[in-house]
Amino acid sequence: MGGTPQKQEKGDPVDGMQPEHEDAPPGKEMSRRDAVQRLAALPVAAFLSWPTADQEKVRRFVDNAMRAAAEGTPFAPKFFTPAEFRTARILADMIIPRDERSGSASDAGVLEFMDFTMIDRPNAQKWMRSGLAWIDAQSNTRFGKPFADATESQRAAILNDIAWPERATPAMTDGVSFFNRFRDMTASGFWSSRVGVKDLKYEGNTFVPDWNGCPPAALTKLGVTYAKFDRSKQRLTPD
Image (cartoon, rainbow, N blue to C red; front, side, top):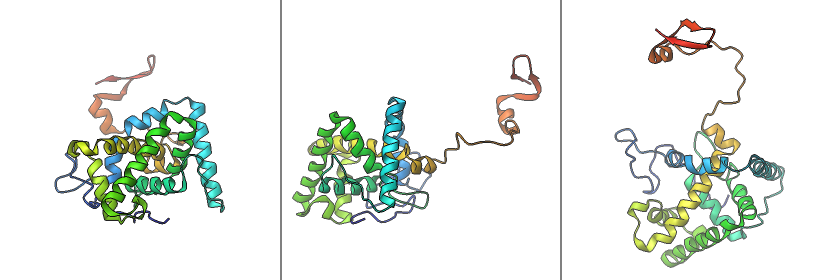
């Protein structure tokens, strides 16, 4: 895709956008994917709070769009203009780039997820459209070109001013607000997708042919033993 950032190695700094996180191992920076994943719990939880029918509807829409694209029919957004769609794709892939573990935000159908959500929940349209316009205005003012036509370092310079609220200046307030919401929607779309679930290494809903009980280390930590299994109450009892 034109303008899509190149693959970044997990843990590598990306154009100054990844300050060292207090929970990262000494001397090692978190990858942007890991940093976003730490922030994803609330937005993903918000998506999971949607009615089940709505969740299934958007997932079906994204799956169908991705399948059609794989068969040669490009996705035609209903909300985004072509220019907005290009900008949103680049921005989403800067937030969650492709790496050795899994695909990028756009690989996971995040843009299709966003377009569906904007049409399905029109109250979100204003902040999305005005935010993308703000990003372009910043790029035009600083570099004389739209965000999608800027270099990777120029794009990163803009995001660096709005991605970390505690460091942002008052002049960046609108950009910070937009980026926070865009990042959250990117996280929701990614970690609710097939690609995102695999990225989390989630193993739920998987058939387990043999159950050999809890690992001994876990039993020891809990202070229980199968030797004192209370069959009447179907529970383990303390040693």
